[in-house]
Image (tube, rainbow, N blue to C red):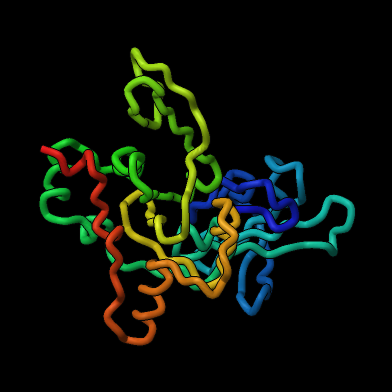
Length: 241
């Protein structure tokens, strides 16, 4: 979850559990952004701001308030969202549409299962020779390194034995090439004008809709979502027998 007071800082502890600093802490009920929440004590783990976790009436953590170190009245409220991407970027409007397996042709689906390519990272690795990119919330924060061998042409997410490999950050060619997935391989779709594109180094006009955005928009309008060729997730070498 990116900080709003310090945009390059990321909160990586965003579960619903009570943090250690708030165990047995008595708190008053506050109304913040129209929500009734209990505010915990200042979390001493953070030094970029004075951070207080917020809890609902069932004592589930639902967000935090972060206050400037120099002016306590200068603060931001951050909320956990249903989508991990929404939580990370503090954006409403992220939607889901089933898992990635529904986008794979039968033969590709069967090969991925047989080869054990069943995590976002292993699926991404099979797409490195094409344009398609699988992106998880963690990959937005920590861009994967791609190792390319100038001798054999192989590409991988880890150094390859007996190869003259050079590492560079994962590149994303266009919005059309991206599939956002979580650790369970559920596909997420960003809202219009999401900041995720600039985080990925893409600055295309906001009027251009990616397949993910088209699908989300079509679902909202009760229409059949469009499918592009790249929705098949068929990297050439993954289809080879």
